[in-house]
Length: 411
Image (cartoon, rainbow, N blue to C red; front, side, top):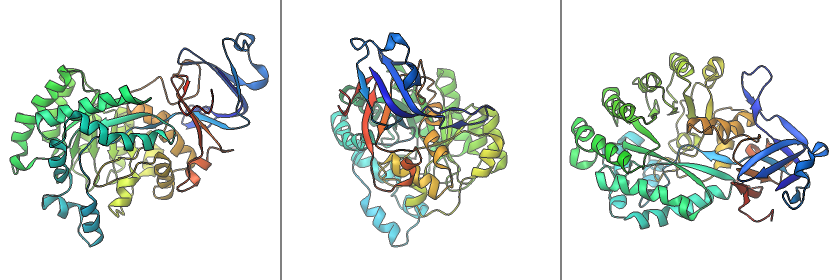
């Protein structure tokens, strides 16, 4: 396949190597073979080997924009039930911690999730997945964390793995057993970690269900000592870690995760400059989640200036979940990251492509360059900033996954 007469946002490092930028080609072409990008360049300088129509059928994109396929690097799309009633409670004045301590929040989703089998969990997740794919997403991270017992946590991960079997998307799974203490272990988080969370992690790893390990380090969840026990097991098993940290307060989760070389540290509204320095030293990505910030009516902004100052890579993600971020639009997420957190549109697009790939430990996607997977999004826009600019508008023309047109616009 040869895509020509296109604008291309290749997403490359700037000349000084300090950050990623659009790196636009305004009359570009992309050659694809065997699921890979084999050449990117100017449309008027296509090498002869890519002009054979039998091997590289040509598609005139009529000036449309090509970007890397988008990546949602933090989701909870597999779960049972919903929390619309809690949404109503928040509007009547209840706070997140108040709802959680009253038995709501994360724990309120557990019953519905435990009642669903793998097929039911998959079926309920697919509409959420489809909403993301319709906006050019090619990779989705999926967390467990709403089972909080061995079998349901495993079933969530099994359902997540099955998504790849029925949709043209790449799934990365994350074990989030340390998400909350279930009702049957109320007041005994240490016992839950030792008797359920860690043994379930070992079982999930043995079944090949885990790409990364996560936890929720917060006053209403688990402290740094408890998370450290989980991370120590992950390290022994050779599994990378990431962490929900500094969302509602600062109890040291960011520095803990950085000490473990975390792929990413997510939320981070209450992180400070010392945390930013620790993240820069560890290479951890700050994953910004404006959907939760919006839903919870938060006012504490993540330390964007400190992240820029110290060169902390920033990704953006939906945090799609039933309670605090029922958001299934990566494009709206990009807009929110600009509007709430003051990212530039360039940072937002990089945050949903190359930096999101880094947050998942992927080095074969997130850029339009030779050698990368041919996961691309083609847009009916003239400039990449339009992807963050509009609200409630989807300009996707086609999604190319592994070199195949999924939307069939390019056939």
